[in-house]
Length: 78
Image (tube, rainbow, N blue to C red; front, side, top):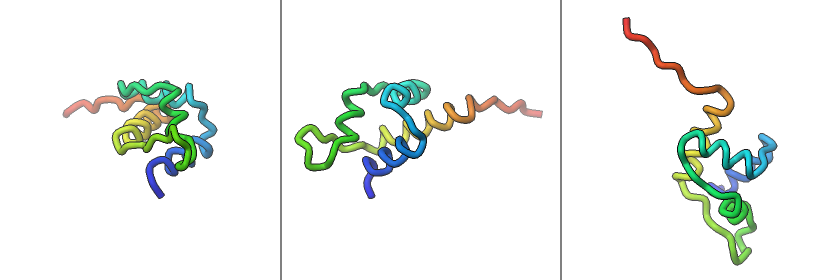
């Protein structure tokens, strides 16, 4: 299972649209366009298929944490 498969399964499981994924990535200052996402979600044998890199998946997951939980509050030192 590669990054594209993981990304596709997360999108389906969380019922996310491409515009929502773009917004989630923006939460961690990572820019991706909807057309790039379309290329990532294509079939492997499609001519415009694009492999999902580790950086994209990592930033999406970090943005998803912020999207679901909110921004982590800073702890005060005693």
